[in-house]
Image 1: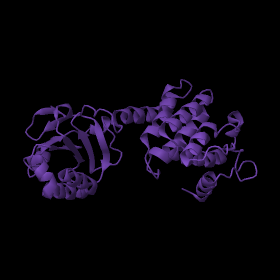
Image 2: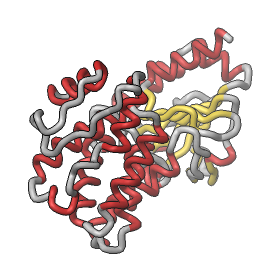
Image 3: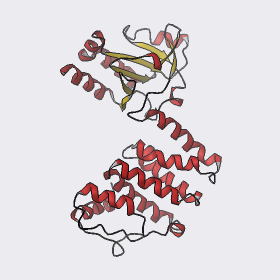
Image 4: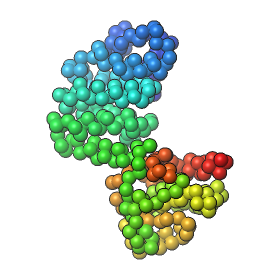
Length: 295
């Protein structure tokens, strides 16, 4: 959060509204004094943030719009999810007939909510920006291709959604699919045998007492999927992986599930095959195992 966003948050919290008098590109709405709760104030701002912005002309100064969009996203992060998503859908709808401006906003959202430059990934908030670009027939197909891919993968990978079907070839040479792997806690370990961090995570996961006991008690299962071809060299590399693990390979797994975090990456899927956690680090996986053992 930059200084301007911080100041805005403070002013929003203490009830001071600043519009044309402040260093803003357009006036901000005045929040009614009757709204006292911070999140409710953010909900109000999420709904009315663009009220005094003439969107048909505002994008003539894209740098200024980008700055205001940063503030807007900081508000949405503190609003209720329903209010935030409704606000995004309203904004993208207004920009439907301004495809270049809608695309500019989506690219800003990508940088703040999805890409490498994002302070925090918020998939549910980013998804409607990407979907708006995909749905807009005025946006060039080549320009929307990236957003179409992102939207497709994200919809399959949202926390709370059913885990996608991911085929793989087991180290025994059999064709298998994540659809058929189930447990109270299904830990999916995406890795590359040539990745040092992956190998360190594998050793720590194998050595963890809590996870080992959960596997022995049939409460947990680990599925290791390498993002490579199931070659003879790969089978040799994974031969030492624990016999209690299901080990497979699929070089295109990232076309089925969100793996923008690279490897190693962990997903945790529940007994109903719903995604409970995604993009976990090994420390977080081991902490989940410890918490389960305490129950």
